[in-house]
Each structure stands twice: as C-alpha cells, then as structure tokens.
Length: 255
Image (cartoon, rainbow, N blue to C red):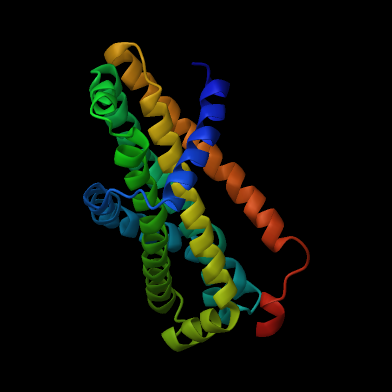
C-alpha cells in the first residue's frame, strides 16, 4: 500500500474504533496490559525530558526577562508555554517514538506471521482485540503523562530560578497561578488525548497493513513513527489555530 492509501485506511480504522466503542466492545485485560505499557514504562523518560526542556526554556526566559525588569513573569510564562505547547507536544513525540513504533512492530510481526489471520479464523475481530486497547491506553495515559510532565517542568523551572537567579519560589508560583488558567489545563489534556489516539491509530494501522516479511515490518515501523509525528504537528497547529487565535489576555492579567 502507498503512503496515501495507508493514511486513508487510518481514517477508516478510526471510524471502526469509534463504532466498536459505541457498542461497548472493549477487551479489558488487553486494555489493562496496554495501559501499563504506555503509562508506567514511559513515565521515567517523560519526566527526565520535562526537566531538561523546562530547564532550557527557563534559562532562555530568565536572561531576557530579568534585563527588562520582568522577572516576576517568568513562572507564569513558563507555565503557559509548558501547558499549551511544550508538554503535550514533547510527550507525544516521546510516545510516538516509543509506543507508536512498538504498536507498528508488534502488529506488523503478527500480520506477516499470519497471527492476524488466525484471529479471524477464531472469529476474533482484530480491531476489538488489538486496536481498541491500544487506542484507549494511549488516549487515556498521554494526558496523565502530560500533566505529570507539566508539574515536573514547573518544579524544575522553579528550582533553577531560585538557585541561579535568586527568584523566590513564592514569586514564581504566584506568577504561574496568575497566568495559568483551568482553560489552559483543559486544552493541554485535550491535545494529549487527541495526540495519543492519533499515535495509536497510526501505529496500529501501519502494523495491520504490513507485508513483505521482516523488511516490511521495519519499513512499517519507521513510516508509522514519521507519520505519527507529522500528524501530531499538523493537529497541534489546527487545535492552536482554533482555540488560541486572536489577541491574548494572560499577560494583561498579570500586569
């Protein structure tokens, strides 16, 4: 199948997943296994990345804001940047590389070794048994990982501000509390849920459409990661355009 054909079949697979979920077709044991694989096994690398990203962003913010006498805004601007863009996108990138590739490789191997055909002979729908647990796991765990990443990033930024720039934690947290709203957190979770579902759909679809033996599995895995990343970036732009276009009001509240 060509890349465009696979993209089209991903939309069809999305429709199947939605239809089956509306009918309550959820394999609970597989879903629990995938929740553990997506969430617990990705937690450490997500938190480490959050600390590094927030640290770099804090350093760049602090050196500019202090020169303009706006050091009290550093915590709030960092919180907005992490919640609206950095943590959902960076966490999705990590999961696309780690989880999306695993989904494509696992299902691709099952496809070329005819295990998918065996499921069909046993009258087991691969969408119910294989795809839906992965979509639910990624769609539910990515928001959780994103919120944990956001909290870790804020703590890391606060420590850097206190140790390197003599900005008290109270000033940092007050700025973050003033600028960050519940709407920002809601959009953060919404983006993460959409990204997680997209990564699972792409990885599963590329795996189920694999052919050509071991070489085909490797090619499908690589293409799935690239396509998932592209989908995350495009979807992030569309969501940001719909929800955040026009003048903002966060800094005006602080000023």
